[in-house]
Every structure is written in C-alpha cells, then in structure tokens.
Amino acid sequence: MLVNKLALSAIFVNLKTTFNNAFAAAPTQWDQIAMLVPSTGKSNDYAWLSNSPRMKKWIDEKTIKALSAFKYSIVNDDWEATVEVDRNDIEDDLLGIYKPQAEMAGFSAKQLPDEIVFDLLNNGFISLCYDGQYFFDVDHAVKGASVSNKGTKKLSVASQAAAQASFGAARTAMRSFKDDEGRPLNVKPDVLVVPPALEDIANALMTADRLEDGKTNPYKGTCKVIVDGHLISDTAWFLLDTSKPVKPLIYQERKKPVFVQQTDPQTEEVFSRKKFKFGAEARSSGGYGFWQLAYGSDGSVA
Image (cartoon, rainbow, N blue to C red):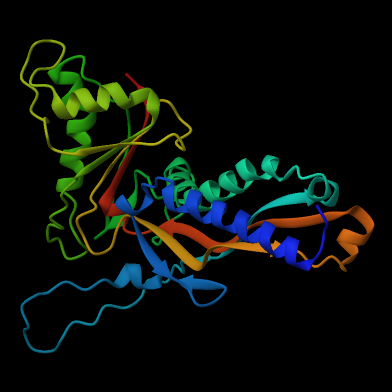
C-alpha cells in the first residue's frame, strides 16, 4: 500500500470506528455504586461532604453547619493507552494485526471508571475519606463517640448464626448509623459487592430459602449482588447503600476517554522510527463519599 495522506486518513478512520464500537459494547458496573461528578479543573474539593444538611424543625434562627476542618479533595489523573503502527505494516498491508489492539484500547477506555471505582473498595481500609479516617474504619467520630463501618468476619451461609455474624451484623450496623445530631440516617443497604471467589456464597445468601444448616434464610432478597474481577482480595466483601442522591463512592471525570491519533508523516517519530500512533486519553479520578453508606469486611475471621 502506498503510504500517503489519503491512505493514512482511511486507515485511522477505520481504527477509530473499531475503537468506538468496542467502547460502546464494553460492559460497566461502576455507576451502580458510584456517582459521577464532573470536574472542570485540576481537582475538586469535597469539604461539603462534612456539611450535608437535613430538614429539621425551624425554631428561632436557622442552624448553619460549618465545614469540617479536614480538607478532602480529589486530584484528576491522566490516563492513556497507546498503540504504535509501524509504517512497514502499512506498506505491506498488515493492518489486520491492529484491529484487536484498537478493540482492546476501546474496551480498556470504557472499563477505566470500573477500575478506578472498584479500586476504591480495594483501598478503602487504608485510604482516608472526608472525615480524616480510613473509609472503612472502627473509629469514625460521631457526636463524641466512635462508630465502625469495618468488619473482619467472612461472608458465610454455613449456618444462620454465621450469616447473622457476618452479613447480618454489617446490615444492622449500617441501619443504626446516626448523624451528628443523633437522628437516624435511615441507611438502607441494597448492594452486596464481592470478588469472584465469593460469588456463590453471595448469591446463595440472597436467593436461598434456607442456609446450609437447614434454617430459614432471613436475608433472602435483601440486596443486589455485584461481582467484579477488579477486587483483589478473595475474602473481602462490601455492603453499600446506593439509594441516596450521594453515593458511597465518587467517580470524578475531567475528560471522557477519547480516541487520539498521530498520523502526520512529517513528524520526527515517523521519520526516525517509522511509527504512527493511536490510542485513548482521559482525565479522571475517584474518591470516597459518605462512609455511612458503606461497610467493608476484610473477611479475615471465620
């Protein structure tokens, strides 16, 4: 094939179409557990998370809540996936080898929010949220008391007692969370997130009439199960309330993933190395919303 401007344009239009088709077809789950927050700069400030108002009886003057002294901001990261196209491959009509790479670039670009959001759960035991504590922690300060949204029990269907000690305890803890004024937050856990290793246990817990000891399963149908391979631990599991306007996790997007290309035959890269390029670019990041809407167990204790 003769390498000229017209030929290069046609080649990269086809690669872009392949990329876009793969992008559109790729599955995602992140938006079931995280909220999308648009970003217009380098970072976003989330100090407002400490100051979310609730309706209360108006007596005398209005109550104004001050922002927390702890600052919580999320800085956008740059993301890329780049593929080199050798000029010899164009001349020799070997462009078929780049179709799967364009497809994988599109798939990876669509999966980026999933990687970011589910990695937040992976790191929730060691990463800080808006109150200055780890997202999953045993001592979140609420009205002078320490409140825990962190557990250690393995998710289990071995017996009713085991299910109550793991899933049941997490569910009860979340439903008992209160605000700084001592009023119930009315948390309603509705999503159970697990790695592939816990898929069968989670599905049994949500669908079986009876547990393995023959006793009635009190948790049947209480949550939707989400299984995701981005979760690193085979034992950790997470219970979330996704019913509120503010979700427990944040996906912050500065620039959506887009197809990019470098096709000018006069560039130094092409002249010296015979390389054209295409791929994807994005700017985004992730962070933590209300810890009260999440419970994480590392599953380290039977």
